[in-house]
Length: 374
Length: 265
Image (cartoon, rainbow over all chains, first blue to last red; front, side, top):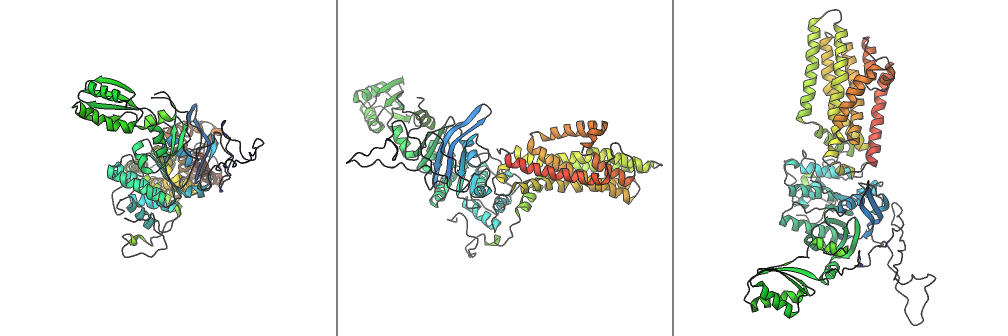
């Protein structure tokens, strides 16, 4: 269980270079810097060592970074608060669609989101969002919608007034009309006369989302937006995020809940301890996880007999009998294990009560990605 | 539920559109939108009670001075309004209102909803000053002018002088304390320390310090318009009018500058 891959595994072609690329010019797409070659990478085409071997095709040209359709580029960004480094040398690019910003509590997600929205300046590096630096370029901020993590919305205002103000400050015509539609989109009645202060947490969350989308932004950033929502609202919100992504917007959703992220979409950016741990396809991360030894807790009667069966069967590589009703096993083949555990219980007339993967939580993903071990 | 995020503004309102009645309602200028929001946030029961109590106290005391009468009635009334009105009531009411204008948004972390918008910073700073000033100016100038009218047995010249000096003081103090609310947490405490240590103590002891006091300028206007000698109120009339307005303008500009560079929670 200690054989972990190195940090920041490459999951797709968008995995960042190891050093910050050149900062993009304000208001334009950033220049595509040449990512430094990894020690074992082939030489770049055109370099002095790039000798053409007759009969062999030339090596494929590396994809330019950041990709041409990037709407958010975070380049070599670090952020320190005094001696505390919250974000350290993070580089990634985000394309239109839904991207999950994933990390355990305290990983630096919220700081990263604040950097992306220009709410705080980076100590080093640069951020480019929808055509400019959101900290200095008001036009870029106008193409950005933010759902902050904090609960507070203007408590004494009505929801329609809060969202109308957001539309007004974004310079929209028919601000009230657009606000009514944005509230309806998040399933809130615009006619509600109650002030926001009397709303439940879920309703406030929806007001925050409505004010973030009322001006039809190119990039929508949501910091833990599903907190406080009931399952039906969560489902609706996830559908909304997916719809926004399908419409060509860039939607960045931070979360520390792995199961939520699975439903957002396929692209994830994983941060841990202020560093970029990985980015790429969610399913690629899970597939890598599946290749690792998986610890599973089994609650059943006649646990010793079941354990003996599984060991003899060869579908587990380790076993710890907690007591006669509980086992912790380690397997490298979860799929086979799932089939065989039922057979084992049937063979020994054991009543199977629970099968729980102990490594299938987000903390385990991060432990795996940062190579710390369980 | 609408499938599209936001409707196209130019699209004709269909019969099925449940929000068609919101169409055509004029969108206010962003400055007006900000101002209205911040003004509504100002008017809490506690603040209205504070201004009411201080105003009532001023009128009550000047009424007692008028009842006593005597050759120094006007000097006594103006002296009291200088000490209590310009020295305590106006700065304290301005502090309570203005320090919360942006300070409250910083405390409850709602500033981000305004900051993230493409609205120019000066607009937010101006609205954040205008909102408390809109409350502070009438809620201090009117009762203190009434107090002056009562205390001077209906002298309109003195009443006018008190009103003008109070307006100047309130404009300057609200701008300063709006900035203070953005700069520091617990701005009410810092503001009180400033008032009681600097404005009411240090600035009344030394001439040099008095020049750096807000209070001395509207006090000078009051002194010159009423011909009543007041301590540390020897500035020119023009300085007494211009300096508070310049202080207000500079404070609003600094607020905008600070907003542009602040880290927002």
